[in-house]
Length: 193
Image (cartoon, rainbow, N blue to C red; front, side, top):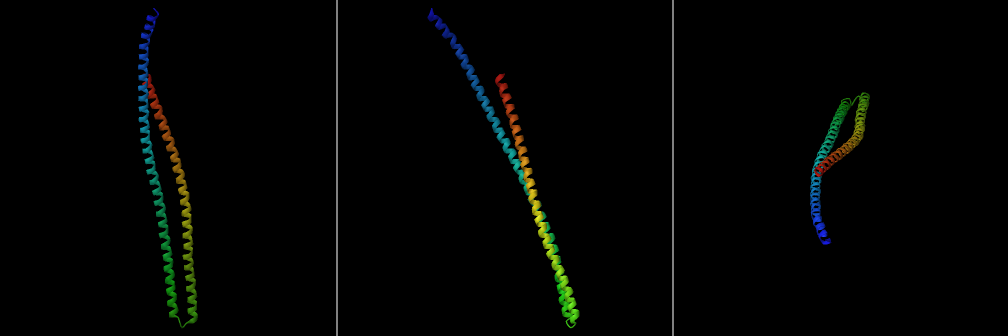
């Protein structure tokens, strides 16, 4: 009688073990599916991150090129403006020098009058030379101010780019968290229902 009870118990255990095995297999396939979903999400995130980074780099490069072009055109414009002013001052100075020489030759016999004209010409030449020197000093000062302004402008642009980078990182993090929550919910719903 004991042997028949043992046989009955063994027979009852086999369907229970088979059911447990089937549940284990089903659970394992659900885990594999969950892993495949996570892998797809990670690949999508990677592609999105690459796209966002590429767009951000293009925008940053465009801004820096624009800054450089603006600085270069301002510097070139300023240089041309001062070159014209210096050229005009030098031409006026040369003209005055030529006039002084002509007056010197013309009034060679009139010593006193010639001396007065030469003195006047020297004063004019000194004024023109002073004008050229003043223009040069003003040009140097303006260029230094432009360099300082450009440095502060570039620092401001760098700070703005850092802020944009931080905002972009926060956005990517939020997108990632939202996508992960959606994937987890979807996987949990798939496992539960």
